[in-house]
Amino acid sequence: MGRTFRLRKRKSRKNVVLSSDPSFVNLTQWMSKRGWKQTTSLCLAKFKDTGRGLMARCNIEQGDVLVSIPRSLLITTATVVESPVGCAFSRVTLTPNNFLCQEILACFLLWEKHLGNTSIWANYLETLPKSFSIPHCLDKSHINSFPWFLQEQALNSIELVQSCFMHLIPSFKDYVCNHCQLSALDIFVWDDFLWAWCCVNTRAVFIDPENVPSHPIPLRDRNCLALAPYLDMFNHSDAVEVKVGLNKNNNCYEIVTLQPVKKFNEVFINYGPHSNTKLFLEYGFVLPRNVHDTIPIDFNQLKEVFSETGITIPNEYDKRKFCERHGLITQLYLSKGGLSWNCLTVLKILLCCSNNHKYWQEISFKGESSEKICDNSFKIVKEGIFRKISKDLLKSHNLIFGECSHSCCTFWQEGKRHPTVEMCRVLIHRLKSILTSASLVDDCGQT
Ligand SMILES: C[S@@+](CC[C@H](N)C(=O)[O-])C[C@H]1O[C@@H](n2cnc3c(N)ncnc32)[C@H](O)[C@@H]1O
Image (cartoon, rainbow, N blue to C red; front, top):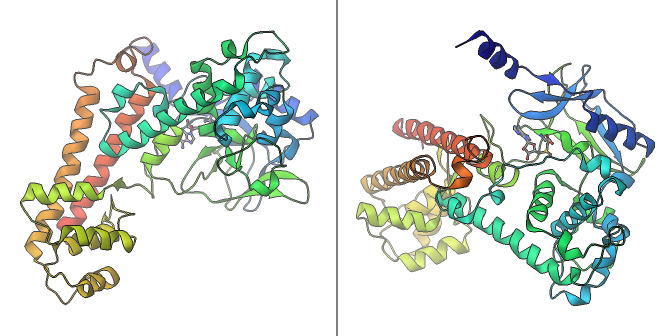
């Protein structure tokens, strides 16, 4: 290892302050002219573990307002109606179905982006990432190598963005941009729409629909998304708590920290109690230690384990219906502490020899029944679940990194892997550590 390599490596391990980053300077100047005031001294930085985010320039106290964004600087569906692309949405009679909130915001970003410097949002657009590591950016065939519980959700997400793109086309047919005279269909290209969709997916915040002015665009979901310039620079941590919402007194969207932050530390917010799988699917990253991390399990997988271990499920159909009726089919997962309560309960019901609902009820309320369940079968099925998850993770790992021939995987940039693929590798690694911890706990007989 040469000296230059070592120096470069040491440098890449440091946090780098980006306070003079031109796009960020332009953004804050532009926002200041529109009534934004900095409430806490923060600066943009590139953190060695989390990438671009915000750093405390002074000690921050519990209860401090981290950021306060005037409502006029939020981008909601109401902003879109008033914007250049808003007219296209007024021709909704041409569109067979109502719109999704995310679809409208993505459409807005795409349109404003094509306006270049003439967009009044140009300073904000300049700060948005150019690429993303969420699975939406991979081709479908690649996603087939993901672990099963990722596959379905990733494919659904991709199908949703594709269907929204197709759904928007009729509204924009024959529509011409007033600014550049280009046909809207030439502006509406798939890659740009995908970019805009990813921006909204990874950056939009929740806003109470009551705080969004009413407008004529027909929606098919809750009108509860907003893009918030500057505020969308905060990264996520599961270790912090914040209070978020519109402050009716000053009409600003605010984030208040519920714990202090030391000078020069990264200032995080909390996107919600998300597992690493959810963070990967929605935001394209995973946390090294995530208190909410789990491996989802589904009922059919449990059934497969039974058949693989040669254990029959007496009265299977009735038991499944019973579990569905009692809400036991949800929250089936493995965490570091072992199988979830619902998962253990479903296993016990499936193993119960009696057809009497009274015993199933006893299990679902108390976790046990006066009807004896064979301890050995219970142990065999639990081991079968661990084995199945382990095999599934290994298979995905090998498929993604073994003889993978997908061009997006091997030749993304200068021979590097696609960031989504790399992130999936990290996710599989984290999931394996859940399995290891859960197996240890289980061996100690604590589950
Ligand atoms: C709302 S943006 C936050 C700002 C973003 N880092 C940026 O540079 O624009 C959300 C995105 O930030 C990244 N991110 C957020 N929290 C992170 C974390 N704890 N570790 C790594 N990346 C994170 C992910 O790429 C996510 O999609």
